[in-house]
Length: 178
Image (cartoon, rainbow, N blue to C red; front, side):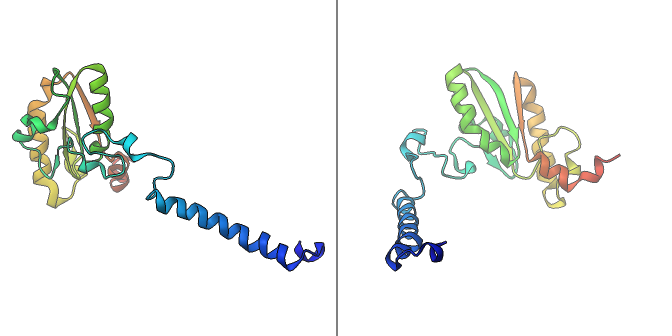
């Protein structure tokens, strides 16, 4: 294109190299200066407790996640979100449940209810059949955790289940094919 139009060396240099380089350097510098946030203001996304969507979900102080759910977790006030109201809901799941805690916290505050959250890593929230989806090394802790949750589940009006359902399915898809 540039050969046929007989642009001067200066115009070719400007259009082919200088201007594109300027735009790439400008955009890169913008993201370096804003620490990767771009136009998003980190303070606007902060929940006031120092929690931010820029951190992993399991680091949220309101998330109760461990390798074994215990009676203490079921009753601990730190696992209760928006505790000034009647506890109506239980968020139960594997580590994926942590992703829903901030959203449910906002809803519970807006609609005036409390919820408890308990998460057991690599353990699907199933009352029956979980042993088909977990490794041998997690079996005892997972089944004991399910037993603890099952004994407390009737005291909630609503139970929200959260898990890596697709992962459990893909690792055990032969059980579902008939």
